[in-house]
Each structure stands twice: as C-alpha cells, then as structure tokens.
Figure 1 (cartoon, rainbow, N blue to C red):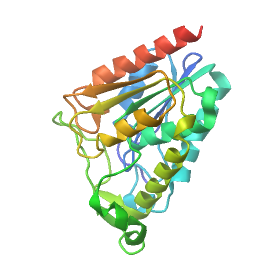
Figure 2 (cartoon, one colour):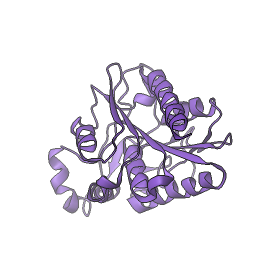
Figure 3 (cartoon, rainbow, N blue to C red):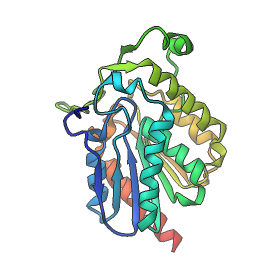
Length: 251
C-alpha cells in the first residue's frame, strides 16, 4: 500500500536517552516529525513510528484496532530499551492516549510523559451510537488540519473510519481502568481552542493519575495539531526542558 507524502517513520540514533513520539488517530508521522527532529537535535535517540492503518487510506485503517496501534508503540519501546538507559514517551492526541497506556504497562520503564491535546473520551453526541453505527456505516466526515497557522497540512484522513473509531473508545476504556498506575512525571500541553478534543480530557487525566509531578500548559495560539502550529516551538522547548530536568533529578 503506497504511503501518503511524508508518512515514513522518523528514526534517529543518538545517546542513551530515548524518546518515543506517537502521532494521533487518522494522522501520520508528518504531524510530529518537527517535534521528533527537535528532540533528535538535542542528541536523544528518537523513534516516531507510523501506526498500522495510518498514512495510507482510511479504508485500510478500518481493518485495524487499537491493539495493533499499541503493538507498534510497544515494539518501538522495546527497540529503544535495547540501547537507552532512560526512556520518555510523548504523543499528540491519540498518541497521548497510547503514551498513557504504555506508562500503565511499563511502570518504572518510563521516566516521564509529554502529552499534547491527549484524548481519553469524547463529548460528541453521536458517540453513544458508535457501537451500532460501525456495523453499517464505514466512515463519517473527519476534521483534519485543525491548525491555526496558515499553510500547514498534517496529512490526515478526511474521514473517520468507524470500526477504528469504535476500537479507539475501547482503548480509552482500558486506559481509564488503569489510570492510577500512571505515576510518572507528566506534562500536558493543551490548546485553549481545540476543535477535536475537549478540555475535559486533560482535566480528567490530571484528576486521576497518581503522578505527583504533573503540570498543564495552556497554548493560546494553536488549535488541535499544536505540534505544527504557532505554539510548536514552545512545545519542543518545553519537552527538552522536561527531559533534562527529569534526567538531572534522577542522577
């Protein structure tokens, strides 16, 4: 299956500090490559995989489930663990969801998390119909390029594949069931104006994780895909500062 432009994974081999970065639902690595590159520029070993069913067609994505996406995240984590002494996990939107799940599963194997507009629930009115609709309707119109900065293209799908969307809700349920296992240092960058993920997501995460070191940073000049938006430099700098602080505190 041919890939969409710039959908290839990002890999950089650097020092003993590893960073795993995940893109979001119906997105692809293009949306996080500037973030991954900024981390690589600091000398870190970075992996930003393309999740199964992403970066090709929404029809292909409808043949995947959340366990497939998570398996690719976990595979990249194991790859980093072979050479890195310390591993951080970061993610945009559903990438943040997968980061939370990895933190639940790996415990002390994750040194810290950086999440950008993460999702663990939806306030859409049609969400209650999803368990039935995904059997009869293949896709809904989607929201792509929710970016305030002009001229940006995240390379996402114009439609939401409903079988995959239903599986995403099952991922959220799994995360919520184990959320108290997340006790790693955590920073969440949240856009004040996000047309995809509601503020209640960040509020719920911060209210339920066991992390004593948890911070919310509100972005005022970006929409949902903040890693390609006006506040991207602040996210990149904040991520590097976070990694350096946690590593220093661990010495």
